[in-house]
Image (cartoon, rainbow, N blue to C red; front, side, top):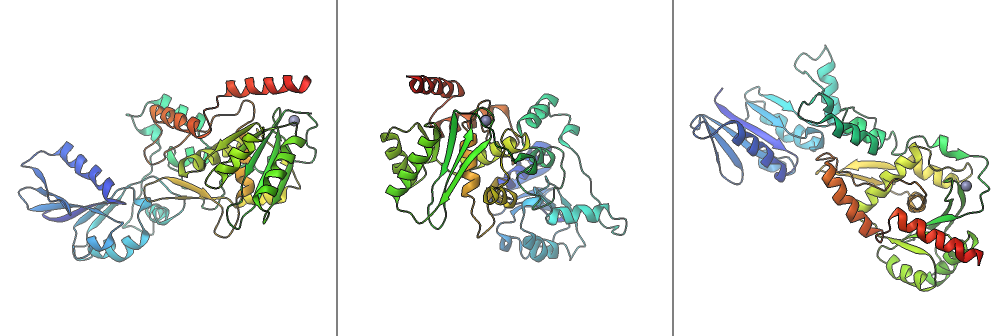
Length: 392
Ligand SMILES: [Zn+2]
């Protein structure tokens, strides 16, 4: 039917996908792409126009009357843009809406989907397809993703399941609690997250053989020299443990000092990507019970239970403690986990565009740089060397 239509994406960059799709299916003169702000396609000599708009600037959508809209990555648009701008733009012509996307928890996209499943809502219909039903996606790629991803991420991104919000980032925490820590005499690995502002410096020692937590220390409001002293004493107590330390910002000179003091220390710089990788690696470690810790480490256990994830507009997942809570114990545990034997290398997932193997490899390399280029093999060599020194 002649008239105005819209292809709406969460951000401007992703509207280009709609433009590309149009170019693929219709050449001029059937459809001609024009304009820049906004872009639009003239269809059938201008009898219909399809506007390519982004929902992050809802004011740019005001004033239109659409006969139909397609919303791409609909779970990631702001609900306010739908309620106040897009939905009203469909009123004049009683237009239709087609919302496409991958679930992002139980947000407005989930509400729409459930309305489509409700016989009492005849104006709504919803359909769900797992990635496996896509004939263009190699089955091996899906199996590879399943093997390397946290179960929740796989269920959401590949099985298109709407997962409960606040269901928690870490699954299987209860199975990791122990009444009786191991009695192995080493070697040990220590993770250290440094206090930056109001938060705490946390040290966690894990048995490198079996992943059992042996000691946690948490302190704040102590000056740097005193902190360095406590870190050194802690590592010394645990057989001069391999130390993974937060070397972000003020942590960088601390790392230098600790290294100069002769500690067996590796730096880890926290950035959006490296933090995501570290948390996802810890998710796998908890879920697969590669680590455990004493039941009375309640501060750590509670931080893990409270941990949350959110999606940015670009579809990247971000992990953090809820507003007003700390996550230094989680970070320290994650850092310690990196030093475990048989530990899976953290992988960087990009849930917006899926996991191409090449991309994962590239991310792996970047992460290697972040953690100082240590390979498992080098780590083992180093530990052997240390063990020999001990014997002498
Ligand atoms: Zn042990």
